Image (cartoon, rainbow, N blue to C red; front, side, top):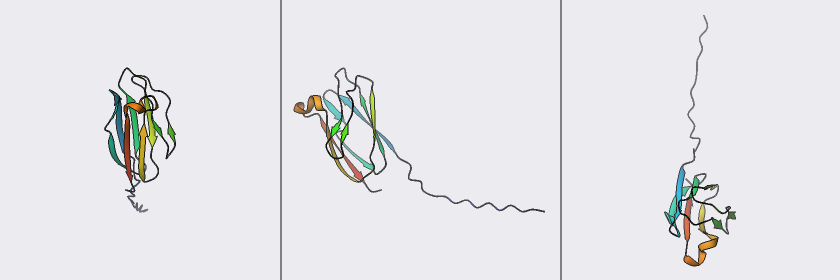
Length: 102
């Protein structure tokens, strides 16, 4: 008679959370977001104006997004990311993401 013993090992794989930021009325919403390392942010343009997402550090430059289009970013390092819409920077269309270690 054979006996099969199975061991289960549960490991925290650190699954990423997904957050949504919308672009509407010349604003990002939410304007300030707090996430963890390896989380994903999906930027969605919900307005009739064209928008994009630009950050200096880390360097992020999305394509211009029409209404309904999205852009995804996975944040790999902790820190602070200030970003803006290149076309509407003078109108203060900007946001900040704080990324924690865990």
